[in-house]
Image (cartoon, rainbow, N blue to C red; front, side, top):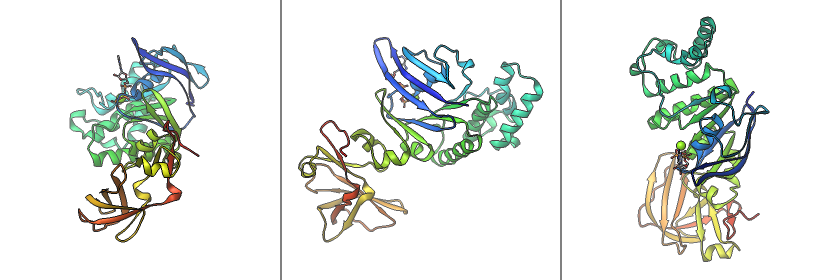
Length: 334
Ligand SMILES: Nc1ncnc2c1ncn2[C@@H]1O[C@H](COP(=O)(O)OP(=O)(O)OP(=O)(O)O)[C@@H](O)[C@H]1O
Ligand SMILES: [Mg+2]
């Protein structure tokens, strides 16, 4: 079991309130991602749940039990960090065994759990190596193995893939998602990478300055962002956010249109502009359009390979069904 509830949990460092009182429920078995810009309090919130920081107020419950004052070891949670923190002089087996040994678990049970974790993580062939003889991805798997053997109520990951190169990150992302579907254990995963959030989460918690801006499934956040901040944060390339006269025509302060919801024509359309830079990814083409008469330059995403030259004139037309409208306070209208 691993249902975690936060009731008015707050955190101050001295005079600075990093997390104003917030409420959040994480259901048993859920994969929840905390996402937000650097410094928004993601790690702090995770560390409060882990018990590595004391709360300044509020209550944390794990499976109905008040865990607010519980020491970390009693909470039954396992944390995996960005820096793997493996012992360089110990083999993979000994590294994974470490928390079990500390807990005084019988050797046989230790062995069963370690062999099982090694199998799940494809580490069986490396079990007698030392960390220095492993790749970055393999080291991260050892760190995850050390968490798995504890059979925790929930896994807490703090940016575990940040040290890996782009290709390996995608691979490990998939491995962690698969691990979750196999173990069905609650996972809380912190990242500032919204692509990781979108691809891995059952539920995303978007944080800004310690506040929860929105909680929802990836597609809920993509389709109906509650405010301008979430609209701009979720989705890549970023949603176009247009203020001024054009937004006024739609009766709001800001309109938003995603780059993939704009059609392009060389001859006619709503906004005429000039192509600046274009980026050819093969699967998609992104290009940036200025001189549209709008206050902001526009980003457009077209599927496949499209010939676009800098300086070309284009006409852009937003899909009106996909237009987002926000009021003076930045909140979604309708
Ligand atoms: N021990 C501390 N003492 C004082 N301030 C702290 C402490 N730890 C964190 N903070 C502050 O709390 C805020 C949130 O920090 P936190 O590490 O939770 O951010 P984060 O969202 O994890 O950022 P990042 O994406 O950069 O890891 C920051 O402004 C940080 O400076
Ligand atoms: Mg952090």
